[in-house]
Picture 1 (cartoon, helix red, strand yellow):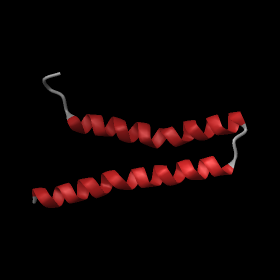
Picture 2 (tube, rainbow, N blue to C red):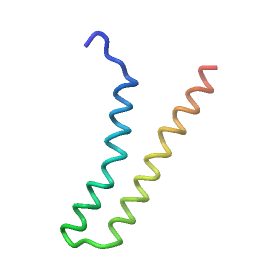
Picture 3 (tube, rainbow, N blue to C red):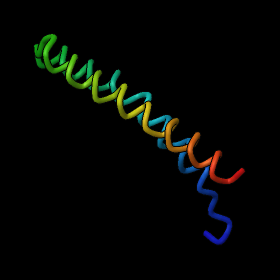
Length: 64
């Protein structure tokens, strides 16, 4: 683990974060849960997607 690369961790996190809503939606359909929970989860998902981009952009500006 001496050569641990944080960027590979963030790529994995992005992958999990991108796949999670589809798994969740399938689970909702299987359970017969309808629109409100899917909308709630989707809004949280979109907000969660925006956070890393804001963080990385501000971090890049600080590094410059």
